[in-house]
Length: 305
Ligand code: 13P
Ligand code: SF4
Image 1 (cartoon, rainbow, N blue to C red):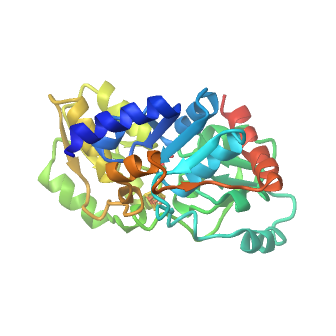
Image 2 (cartoon, rainbow, N blue to C red):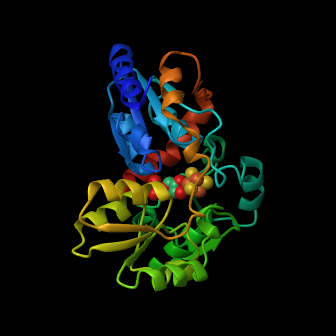
Image 3 (tube, helix red, strand yellow):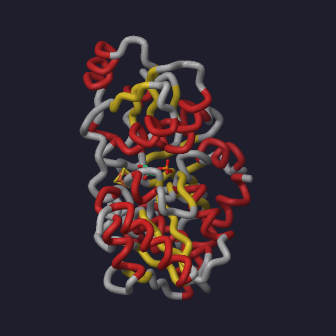
């Protein structure tokens, strides 16, 4: 089967089986095309909780599928490619943070949504890159322990000067690899372009940007801007999607280091196989994990509204 035939077959199967397909914006175009919802991690978690289908199929990484299961425990949640983890989410586990928390009594523990379900059970509130600043500002406590991403945490700390924010040394190895030389090279090649970056990039790179935001934020900014040329400082799929969305504008990739192998692990064939019951993984979480992790996600939704 070629790609359009595979897509037709996927659309038929998902209708037949009452499946809602979610695709994170870092997924390939042919996957986004067959999805019911696409977007950043915050939007997907809210879309999934509102969907009426009995099954959710996540094309993204494991923590995103876990978040869907936590918000919709009565639904069957499938991860299209079981190998798709997140290098940042796997950096810090529950035992480590339980230990670290002892050194920060009285602190509110804010967990980036890129964390495992098990770790969320001992945190106070989740944030996504699009909601982190607003949520941290709305937390009553001045003392915040922000995990695991020190780059997103530094970005939040800059925007929330009244807060006392402690960071740990975690982060996204893909975004954190981009450095100021990469930015200088791209700016020299494309002097008229605006630089849009994800806050998972290091602070020195963020400081050189015209706009810092989540995957959805970057896309929205580029679509609405009067400017015609952009350098995109996040996973390369975003530049590709934008080029299709805005054919009259030009999008350059900040660095070819910005390819997330986990996000690229899912293929259209995986989606097809998963719908046929031949691949994919059903996300199973015990009741206590769902109950405790949900507190932290519910708090994110409450403070994010
Ligand atoms: P968003 O929250 O912007 O979707 O980002 C998720 C992610 O994994 C970025 O690397
Ligand atoms: Fe995780 Fe980084 Fe990939 Fe995002 S880009 S899914 S944070 S490894």
